[in-house]
Image 1 (tube, rainbow, N blue to C red):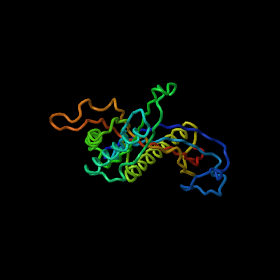
Image 2: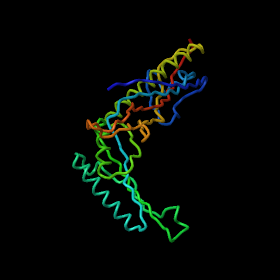
Image 3: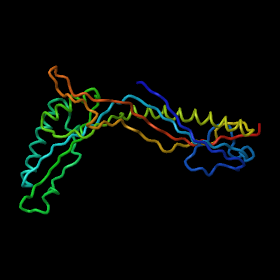
Image 4: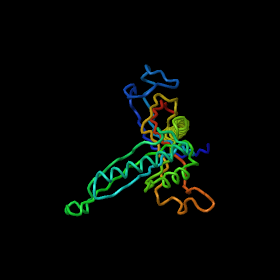
Length: 252
């Protein structure tokens, strides 16, 4: 797994605060005795953000079957026929039924004809979220869905499995903690203090940024003469974590 570490750090210096036991969600660490208030006369509080990236190992494809007609029942029938064809093709390709879920289903009167009952038309859409463990098969699955009757490929989202996300998050935390320590040292040096271990640590604002592909980013050719599948651009998924660390400090 190719991982890159990128960081952004925000810092705040607190001097002359007595005691830190009221910090919510923090855990005591280091060599400082929480009961010794004199040792906590000075402290340095650092907020650091860490980011780690990895190649995706999960993908979600959103495709849709659409239909229009003068009768809402006919539109529903068309959507039903499309549903059967798309699901049959995808399961025959190798997906499980649980990998193909309805993401949106809607039948409504067209806005263009709503004020003209004599020309009433209905529009219907059945959108699916297709889950894949094999990111290299995304283009092939798109071709299968489109060939079976899907009219639109609306979005592709590359992400991480739970195991991969947990590993990348650990890297992001380690990166954030390393930067927190570095900046605490710089703050201490510039303030005539010496860092004497972490007193409390907490995490906040963790998040995952998947890599998303719109239809404009897909290759123009699909299923050419050589049988090549639709080409899809991919990119790394990033995980961001923020840590709050309070370091005990003493006069240099």
